[in-house]
Image (cartoon, rainbow, N blue to C red):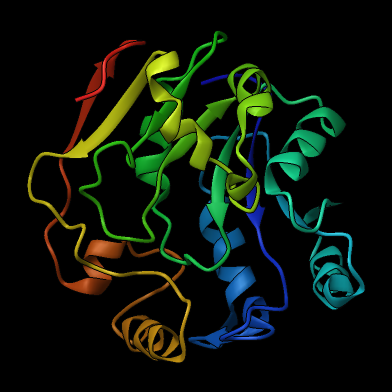
Amino acid sequence: MIQGTAGFIYARSDSSRLPGKPMYEIGNRRLIDIVFARAGRINVADNILLTTDRPVDDGLVDYCKAQGYTVFRGDAFNLVRRTLQALETFHLEGFVRINADCPLLEPSLINIGLAQMSQSDACVSNLFHRSYPYGIAVECVSAALFQKLASSVAEAEKEHVTSHLYRLREQFNRISMENSAENQSDVRLTIDTPEDYSQMCRLAAQGDIVSDPYWKLCGIGQPQTCLIQETAGYDE
């Protein structure tokens, strides 16, 4: 694992489908609290809320600060720039991308990815060849790599954090994490719509949404992680 690595939890309050989503309750706990609790088992120096500098997110920021969470406010619409700002502010060598609308993030998988990181340019992801559920992302990225490729971000990619890395992946060595047991990419475990929220509340009733792994809550097979080294210039 790269020393000086943090979990970056991206959240905002003005979702068009579910305004105020981070404060929604699932199993008597707020969504943002569930995400921070699960992220607390990741092998990083800290987990940091990365939200916008707009007034609409003041309530979210005040709540998170009251809970003792580390908060960073940056560029409202350019998430690549917001990420660069946070990396510089906290003097980090790497980060894990965490979406606050994905409450079932799996610490054990992310820790496998972190264990593969080194001090050099590095990227470990299970999205190069998707075989885990949508909402169970593992993206561990070195600051050096992210900073190096930031100048190549296309305009449409600025509203995302890592989209450009996948487009430019032939330019760097990387490790692809894949589920060798079965392809679970047709399973949806994120909260974007009212239907998604209702489904997550049902899953929370099946166990402990803070501590149980996603496969237990969903009643699907436990993944078997396969790590595949891919070198610059290789693209299957």
